Length: 336
Ligand code: SAH
Image (cartoon, rainbow, N blue to C red; front, side, top):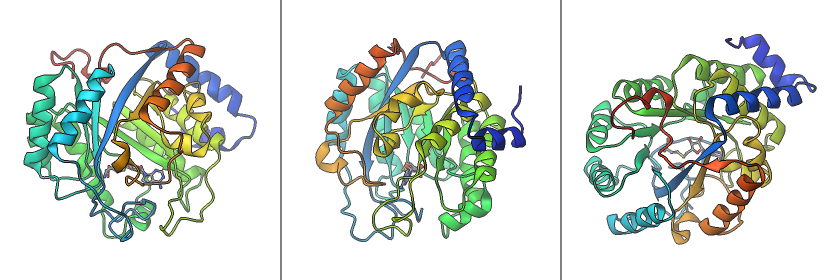
């Protein structure tokens, strides 16, 4: 049954609605996705960015941000570590970096697909359709590009000089080119209330996204929003639960940014509808420069993995043994 705007606003706002909401989302997650939690490895290959996203600590105006770009050799070594750790999905993420040429990325993707049986996900921002096509032809299976907010006016305010229409165009192109598509929003943006969040959730309900990433805003030092209060954990969890009700088949991660908000809540999100975990494999010497926000400093990839595996064992949830493709893709021959 489809959610209405009024219902969403009520479920976000009513102080008594939380327990029931988490139960509904958790039951639906179990029914559709079972007890499997898919692990995705994320490699942040560059923090150069031409984007203006005002909330982001690596936007082009952040002149104090020390920039880096991994070379092919370093990316290769990291991908090897990811595969050796038993992961079936590699996500390559970066700022919108013109220095990462379409040819360079296509070469890396083709090499990963040739050498390993893993899904290749890209998260490299807004690109021309031809570039998306070229990367798809090179073997890319999935693309993550969060709409960030479904409210065009709010989008404009937060991304000076960027275009909401172009963001939508990118997502439409990605669908048409046969990618598994991930979108999502940020909870806790300035001037965002229940009505704006409801628009995001209705968008999740309307579009056949394969993945939906809901994450809290972590006000980033040096940005105009550095002093903004963080959203409450409860609001983030409710939004995740509503995303689950809106899109039963979508993969929904327990967002990494939750660790920065409150380390225990990353586990809680798995009980509010989430079924995916992303783990950072960026080499530590550059990961500290990928400061879209100040991250929880609980250490290495190994620590993070250990902490999450412990939590999964306590919850009787298993990690996936396949690529964990989107539902729309399950019957295709290339189950990327
Ligand atoms: N250039 C790529 C990747 C952006 S970084 C792109 O445009 O898609 C990945 C995500 O980090 C963004 O989509 C945004 O939702 C999130 N993000 C950026 N700044 C943030 C902040 N201060 N707090 C929480 N999430 C943030």
